[in-house]
Image (cartoon, rainbow, N blue to C red):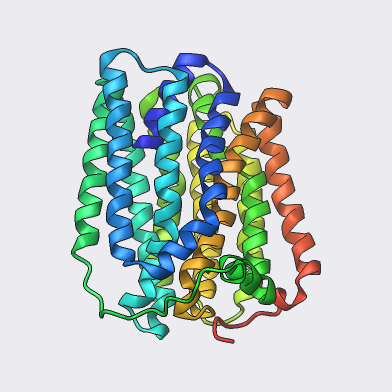
Length: 375
C-alpha cells in the first residue's frame, strides 16, 4: 500500500520517472550506512523486540506522510525524507526477522518455513497494492493511514511470537567481529554466488519501479490499474511459494536457481515490450513466480549454512545485497528510463539479467553443480 501511494503521489507531483528511481535510492542509502551496525544488533539483542520497534518507527513515518497529504503540505522533499526513515527502520528489521525463523522451527524445516514466510509476504503484496490503489481514490491520506495501522498490527503480531530463550555470547566488538559477516560470506562460494547473482540480476531487471509510467502513459490505466500491476508479481510468487512449501526443493538446487533467473529476465523483456494490459499482467505474474524460486533458494541456503551466533550479521549483509538489487535497481531503472526511454530501459534490463545468469554459470561452477542445501 505504501509503495503504490508514494509512487502515484510522487509521480503526480513531479511527473518525473527519475524521481521514482530516487525513491529506491533514498531507501537504499540507510541500508548501506547501517549494514554493519544492524548485524551486530540482531546478534546481540532480542530479535522480536527489534522487529516491534522497527514496525513502530515505520508506522510513525507513514503517519507523517498521511498528515502531509491531508494537511496539503506534502512535497517531494518531505516524501523522500520520510521514505528514508522507513528505509532505516527496514534496514534494522530485515536481518532480525530473517534470523528469527531458525529460532522458531527446526533445522530440517527451515526451507519450507521460508517458503511459508515468503508466501505470507506475497499475499500482502497482492492485497496491499490493490487495496492501496482503491484507497488512493479517496486521497493519499486514506492509503497512508491504513498502512500505518497495518504496521502497528505487525508489531503486535511480533510481540506474540514465542521462542525458547537463548543466551548469546557477547563477544567484544572489534574490527574483526564487525566485518565477520562479510568474511563469512566471502569464504562460502555458494553463498557469495547466490547473493551476487540476485544483486546483479534484480539490479538490471527492476522494471517494477517504472510501473506508474506504464500504468498512466503506456497502458492507459489509473491508480486501480497500477495496484493490479503491482500485485501481479506477487500472485505468481504466492502460488509458487505455497507450492514450494508443500514440495520443498531438495535436489538440483543450483540448476533450478539459474533457470529461474533466466525466466525472470525473459519475463521482464516481455513486459517491457507489451502494450496490452492482460499480457503485461501475465508477464509480471511469471516474473514473480521465477523470482520467488531464487528467493527461497537464496534465503534457505544462507540460514541453513550459517551458525546461529552469526545469523544476524550474515542476514544483514544478505539484506544489503537484496536491498541493493531492489532499491538501487529502482534507481537504475529511473535513470535509464530518463536517458533512454521507459521501454528501452526495461528491455535492456531484461536482456542484462539473462546475460548475468549465463556469466555466473561460468564464474561459479560449484553453484551450478549445487544439489542440496546442506553442506
